Image (cartoon, rainbow, N blue to C red):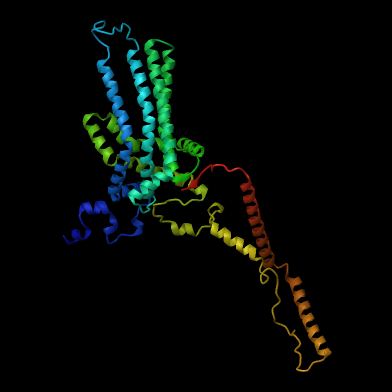
Length: 437
């Protein structure tokens, strides 16, 4: 009983984790992305729900467009002259071939067109919520309201580009698909090619979903221009295609549950989406994308990897020599200061030790010209002896090696400065990959 009271209740241990345990240590912190996902899900569940509620507000226009489209299609199907009683009443529609397809075509032209500005409004919530969840993955402190607004200011335009790419491609694919259905019903054109065009449209929409996900994660994590964002998203989508498909399905299953789950499962999906669905999707995707960045992007760009994870091999890695790309600006500045101070005369050349009988002649209290000459001769003898010693040992290995290293360092820094000045003269270009936010 005492041991149970010391460990706490089941709910407390599930919510708080191992911090209440006496044997808790940093080594028990998450060491993988899977462990970090579960740690955030159970330890920051309340914040995820709050962030999800903020994002749900911005998704209301998208939900309204979807619901109104379903009602519009249903109303047209109920009142349209599709069955018996043909010719009875007014107006008379003797030819109904392609009529239903025509209704769907013009209805979707309106509703899928309205989906574009609705998605632009939803981008506000994605920008703010994605920024908070990214900070949770990086194990940074957050204030939900302040960070939500900060995320909107920082990430909105990148997220807007992502959702516009998807919504515009969805609009075009749906329009072309409805047009193909209408032409097939009217018997115009080759039905095989029209069906193939619909399949191509579905494939493009599926690829646009993956592309949108990568554009969101790249736009939230890195600072880059519109063209660089699109190009890098295509590279990441194609380069990690199998993993991207798996984690996209793992992230979006609440949406499929809501849309295609039947009465009970749809109600369950709606509740899930209202409480934590959008936050869950962003958490899964941003956690996976951070793994991909650590593997393919951050090491090449000299950025820190494994943010939010406990690194057991930190001590061993710190002893390894840093690569040129990982060398800090402070170290480069330190080396530049050493070069600016010049070579040390005590190190770069031989200095004769004072271990012989050569001494400077000491003038007496009353001295003559002969005493001054003796003083001058003693100094000259010491200088000549020192010069002879320097000439004799100037080719020693330690002096040659020091001078060589100093000259190489000086030349490297000069080339670096020259290269930097030349780059500044060129027209500015967006980074290929990538600037850290």
